Length: 263
Image (tube, rainbow, N blue to C red):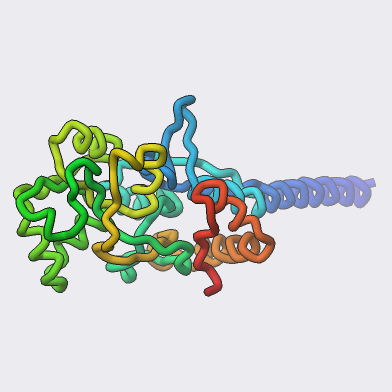
């Protein structure tokens, strides 16, 4: 009898262990994406108060395929490094420029090319860099355009910046465009993808200068050394490229396939 009771007890304990282990194995991972909620079309708040955007759609598809729960975490862009280092977010995924930051994060391969350009009012006739001399120019704080215009290794960019009457910084581009419309500033330095999105339907009011300030690449930035999570995300992105899903999402947002993965 004692042996039977011992056997039944051991069997029950084994069952509990297996059940608990199985639950742990199936437990969903929460994947927290840090993004700037005022950076359309990559990530922003729509008229319904929902977070939407190109990069957020990509992240949602990655999570669906991997069985993860997506958590969207709007962050103060100036605090993005603290958020990542503290573990509050798993990655920075929001039109995030790799150039000049290669050694600061563990990156996926570049998934999109982008350029820095200037947007001006069409009525002003400012179409070249020379036309910006003596003008008021604004950029988003801690943006790639700000970094490019402060790059001491690029004397042409420094000379261009020094030719401005005033070089200002704004919190986000919606404010910048209100300032441009009102005449408070004469030009905005920004990503070409964001510029095209912002002036869509208003091409008679604004122009994008043909000459780019610089070209750059977008990637997904993870905490330095977190290669395991980076590899998982990149593997899934490549699956999306191969089956055409990446191109479909890209076309919905930009009208063409912006993907550079695998090139």
